[in-house]
Amino acid sequence: MVVINSALLAKKFPQLPAHDVDDLVNQFRRFDIDGRGQIDQKDLVKVIQEIGEGQSYDQIRATIKAVDINATGKVEVDEFLEIVSKLREGGGNQQTSGKKVIQVKGANNNITHSMNDDERSEFTAHINSVLAGDLHIGDRIPIPTHTMQVFDECRDGLLLCKLINDSVPDTIDERVLNVKNKLSNFQIIENNNVAINSAKAIGCSVVNIGPQDIMDGREHLILGLIWQIIKAGLLSKIDIRLHPELYRLLEEDESLEKFLRLPPEQILLRWFNFHLKAAGWHRTTDVKDGENYTVLLNQLAPDLCSRAPLRENDLFSRAEQVLQNAEKLNCRKYLSPQSLVAGNPKLNLAFVANLFNTHPGLDPLEEVERPELPDVEGDREARVFALWLNSLDVDPFVNNLYVDLQDGTILLQAFDKMHPGIVDWKRVSRRLPLNRFKQVENTNYAIMIGQHLRYTLVNMQGADIVDGSPTLTLGIVWQMMRENVTQTMKKLSKSGRDITDMEMIRWANEAVQRGGKTSKVSSFKDPSFKTGVFVCDVLNGVRPGSVDYAMVSRGTNLEDAKLNAKYAISVARKIGAVIFVLPEDIIECRAKLILTFIGSLMAIDTAGKA
Image (cartoon, rainbow, N blue to C red; front, side, top):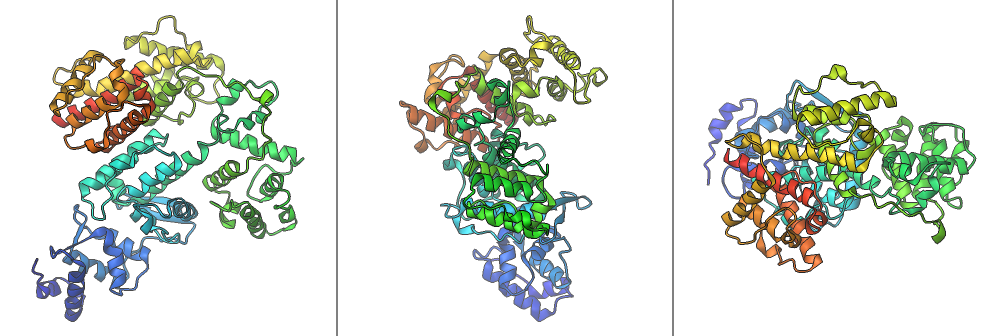
C-alpha cells in the first residue's frame, strides 16, 4: 500500500484546512481499492459527488479538465486535492449545458469551439433510447440529457461502437471489443480504433479525430461523430430498394437511373414536398413556423393529427402542438419547440428522416408498377471508392461516385492530396455551378495528370466522367486508390520502389507463416480467400495475439465464412487499419477490394518495423 503523507500535503495546499486534508486523504483511500495511491479518472466525478463536495456534474468535470492529470488516466492524491481545492474556490468556468450554444476548450486552451446544447441533449436522448438494456453498457443508461456526461461515457469507445452497430447493423463484430469494467489505456485505444475506423466505413467524415481525442472527451469532436453516426443510420433506410414506393416520387420525364443518383437528403425533401403538394399546401417554404410540419403530419395520419396548430399564433405554442401530434405517431424525437422554431438543420433532418422511416405514407406499388432496378456493375466498388475519397478529406463529401465526380474537382483534390503540388489550381474552374464546357476542361485535366502518373487510361476522355460512365469512372478511381495504398508502403520500404501485386501476395503468405499458420494464396483471385481464414491468419502474423482462434471456424459454409470475414475486418480496424470492404467482398473473392484490405495490413506491418 502506498504511504500518503498528510502533513506534506497540508503544506502543499495551505488553502485547505489541515483537518480537511486528513479527511480528504481518508476519503481518497476509500476509493483507492488496490492501495496504489490512484483512482481512475473516469470515476472521479462520481467520487467527488459522493464525498459531498456538492458541485454540479458539469462544474466538477470542467474543473477536472483544468488540472494537469498524467497521461495514464490515473489520479493521484495531490491531483485529487488540487481538484477539490479549485472547486471550493469556484473553479470550473467552462460554460455548461442549459445554454443554447456552449463554448468548450480545444486541445489547446487558447482555442474554443462552439457546440449546440439542443443537439447534445437530443443525441443523448437518442442514445438512451437505442442502447437501453445493452449487454455491455446497459448499466450506463440512461445518461442525463442535461449534462456533459455523454462525452465521458464515450471515452472507452464502447458506446460509440454500440451506436454504430445500432445505426448500421453488423458493421462491427462485437467479439473484438474490450468490454471489461477496468480497461487499460491500450485496450481503450483499441476500442476507439474500432469506433473511428468503423465510422469511416459507414460513410462518416472522420479526418481530424483520433483515439486520444475520444479518450480525452473532446466534446465538439465527439458530438460531431455522434451526429454523423446517427445520421448514417437514419438516411440508410431512404433507399428505393427498401421502399419501392419511392418510385412514386419520380418527376415527369425523370429516369429511374437519375432518381437513384439523388442523395438521401434530396429524396427526403422531395418526399416532404410530395405530401405538401398532395395536400394542396403551398403557403411557406420553411419549417420554423411549424405550418409545413402540421400539414405533413395531417397528411400522414389525418385521423390522429389535426391541423389545429395552424390556428395558434404563438410560434412556440404551435411548435409544441406539432410535436404533440408527432407523439401520437410515436415520433416525438430529436426536436423540442425551441429547436424547431430555431430551425436547427441537423435536428430537423433527423426528425423528418425518422418520420419517413416510420410513416412513409406512400401507397404500395402494384406488381405491374414495380420498376426493374438496374444492377449497376461495380456498385460495391463504387461504395468503397467513395469512402476512400472521403477519407482524403475532399470537399464536398462524396455521396454518389458517378455524380459527385462529374465536375472533376474531387478527382483533382484527390490527386493533390496524394501528390502535393501536382495540380495547378489556376487551371481549374471551381466556381459553382460549372457548365458542361468547364466540367470537361476539369476532367480532361484530371485524365492528363493520370496519364502523367502512368495510369492506364486508353481512349478515356473527360466527357466520359462528366457523363457519369460507371466503367470509366471506376477505372480511374481504382488506379488512384491502388496507387495510394502502395504509395504508403513505398514510402516505408527501404527500396522506395513501387510494390507489385505479387509482392503483396508474397508478403501476405510470409505474414501467415510468421504467425505459425499454413494457409496460402497464389493471387488476389485465389478462391482460398472465400473461407475468411487466410485474412485471419495474415492478421495473426501482423499482430500476434490479435486473433482469437476460438472465434474462427474453417469457413466451409457461407454463414461461417461470412462470420470469419466479419471478424477479420473488425480485428483489422482494432489494430488501426482503415478498411472499407464488406465481409461479402472477401467471401465473394472481389480481387480489387481484397487488395485494398491486404495493402492496409501490409502498411500497418511495414510502419511497425520502420
